[in-house]
Amino acid sequence: MSVVDKAAVKQFLMSLQDDICQQLAKADGVGEFIEDAWYREPGERLGGGGRSRVLRDGEVIEQGGVNFSHVTGNAMPASATAHRPELAGRRFEAMGVSLVIHPKNPYVPTSHANVRFFIAEKEGEDPIWWFGGGFDLTPFYPFAEDCHFWHDQAKALCQPFGDDVYAVHKAWCDRYFFLPHREETRGIGGLFFDDLNQWDFATCFDYIKAVGEGYAKAYVPIVEKRKATPYGERERQFQLYRRGRYVEFNLVFDRGTLFGLQTGGRTESILMSMPPLARWEYGYQPAPESAEAKLSDYLVPRDW
Image (cartoon, rainbow, N blue to C red; front, side, top):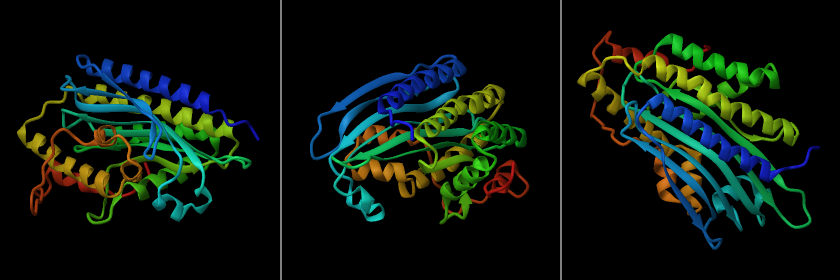
């Protein structure tokens, strides 16, 4: 069994944040990520710190955030130990990079990615650790070729780790990013996994590296292809309406959001995933056979 190297994970995550911000800023062409570094002394609530980076009002990105955090706690919240009783009485550390990009142009999809590491330790006992993460795409006006490209990139990065990894983590993504009250997926999916420790530490860490670095390889080419597509007020209003679904998922179902709020995490960083503008409309129905109506065909799990 390989040694658990927390310092190496942290170094990679901070470097990944740098790299993703550089690539996204280059794709935007105008906007820059502004950093908000923060730190909390250990106490009853979460200790630790992080670097929240936000790009606003760019040429392509209306608002995007790429966060790194490394937090510590003396005890897990009751909601966590109820499901994982083996974590009771252990101090813990959680570190990760999480990002959400909300573009201006409705033809450029919203995207999300997250890679994270969790470890719980107790004197005289072996540590309990796992990795989690993934990435997913939320188009408003989807192009089949972009969806295939996104999933081809995901499948390629999974392949070295086993023939079934993509299929398992793709299906997990479809299940996780699902809005049961709407009976639709949040987007076209990608990869999602949690509790990853079935391989040794080094292999799990390599997989996290592949997923983290694979996000920009999958997303930036789509941004470059679609960012100059002409659009009007109709497309803009539909984009804002569909962003409402994103808000619904993040506030009601997203486990990361709930964990952060329940453990007293930094609210501004936790809610960075919210779009800058969104709207809701009672009883909205797209015109039959319209481009807006076609989106529903993509909001069901399918093989890409």
